[in-house]
Image (cartoon, rainbow, N blue to C red; front, top):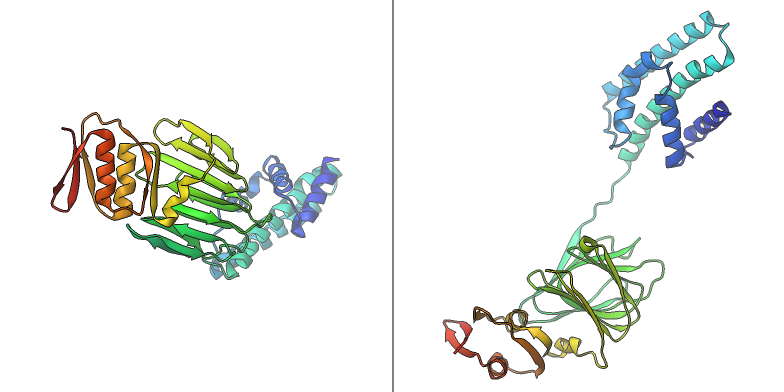
Length: 336
């Protein structure tokens, strides 16, 4: 029965119809035989190439391989003539096994030549960036609309929307994704993956920020935190916040999506740590605001509509009791 299966696998292999599991079965059968010890000097390069890319042999190497095959075939014919009384099973374990080795060796080597002769498509990447103090609108190849917040980088591969839709984001962006059930839209940002089919949402993931945030306007979004083995689904009118420091997750329902007010030039904070607030202000106004305070754990709440940085700083000082001063081109916040 096993011999019948092996012969069937050999036939499938020659026709290039073997699955990965069938190929492993065939290779294990070859490697476990007691009759191919004398042929290891030919087969060993094949075993070495199973789990890595086969390098392209040069013309001299290919000629040497063919000479080795010719020599082995002569030995097989001699063995078959002198050992005609050996049982059929032993002939299978000897002759056919060695023949299979030769088929595999030649097929893998010449197959590698065919693969390497094919033109290889090279994936290149385009970076779309918004500077500090500006927002930028983009239209992707699949029709998806993107608005980048200040100091954001979007990395788009040249094969985007061909077989898949995967991009990378550093910063914050609002996405209105064109539906395509066959090609999920995936955003990569560090260890975070955001996956959607067709929806609109805001995704915030700056390297320097403590929190990763996502707010869904329409549709459903799935968030995967690889380093924390965490998967979450976020529905419309839900806001998700994940701490990169302790992994704390907070998801809340919202009546109005104030988290996308930045699109229209406004700032919105909801119990936001003051150090995170200042990072947003620095990016939005392209100014440096420094906090000189040892134990500042203030949390800021409020909306600032199209106000100057001075007006925003004044409001923060009024809420917290901090004071501000200028040092060169910087603004310093300090305790009384």
